[in-house]
Length: 216
Image (cartoon, rainbow, N blue to C red):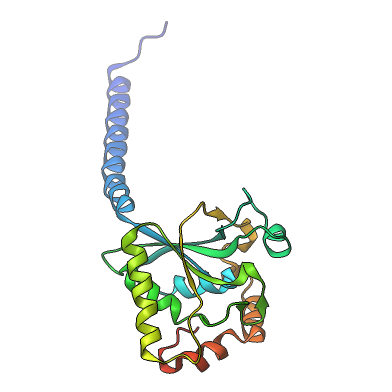
């Protein structure tokens, strides 16, 4: 066996020490991020086309992540084709992960209501059918109380021409949609903008809410 020289052993030891310091430092840097992630909260909203709902919430300060998906139905692991063409009971919806230190659940609900037509029981804008109905999915009594209070406030204001039909529903399993639906508005910006304009989403929201409308 070849005997290593003293300089060679010293070099190896130095490299090992440097590597250990690097990984220890990396671990220390990762810890706060993990703790911050544990602090995040989530909420689920159904507002018609989930491409549009995702786009709207991504622009709201305090929102960390949005995921398009399906919830509220009776079919496990549903596909887009099933949800849009079959009687699955699912809503197109978006799971919103947010920082509660930056934005409150109440603010998210208010923002959501002003981005949709909550008076349409048949769907949203050019999209009709049960999967395009509006709903707020709540995870606990506090969220339900907040959502119902916000709806009651809007109703009492008389700003809308018809009663709000947006349902407040207990949260169920959220199934992420197919990958091609995620961030669709950034992957296919021209097609997305054409769809949104042709569907009349922003025009209808402005008609309903005026200066209070959430439009993009």
